[in-house]
Length: 271
Figure (cartoon, helix red, strand yellow):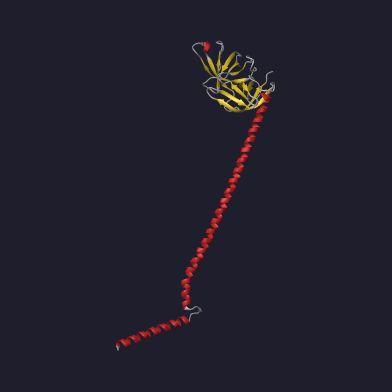
């Protein structure tokens, strides 16, 4: 009996609750049903998530497009850089040719009293045992053995051997070279020879005992010996070496020509 009353009361409560809910939902201003609201609350987060992923993927697509454009721009810049480097090399080549032509002009003007053939160095062997250079002129240009060779700074040497298109020059710093010279202060005759020990100086020997050597004195060709014309600059006295025997004293003469940087020469024709 008690159970029947309890069940009846519970049913009445449930019925009242359902009626209240019905009244509440039926009085909402919106036309959306409860189930529609529930569905919206369930679907909207998923839809928002999909929209976010779409935007993200679209952004990545733009990123990859930008990377592709950057790669193309980089390739274009590399190509332009290569073209600029080529232009620079051509400009350096033209500059070098202009310097050689200027060197020729300066030489021919400086030594206008000589009949000479201009040329430039194409190879060199400046070592302890061989101090020679190769120039780009030969027999076809009128070059002959023993012709003197000069540069803007002074004496280079003489022609050692000749081919049709080239010539080998024995420089004055070669150990086989010997040049008759005079010192500017006293005009005394001495001899300058190449040494094994230096590529920038020659040894002045056979200095008369009565001659007073002066450091910094200029040395030039004497014109004796039949090869080198008189008055070609050789270098300056940089070191005086006295010996126990005055007749054996010598001096080191620094050459005016830098043989490691020499590029342009004149070969003097025999008169």
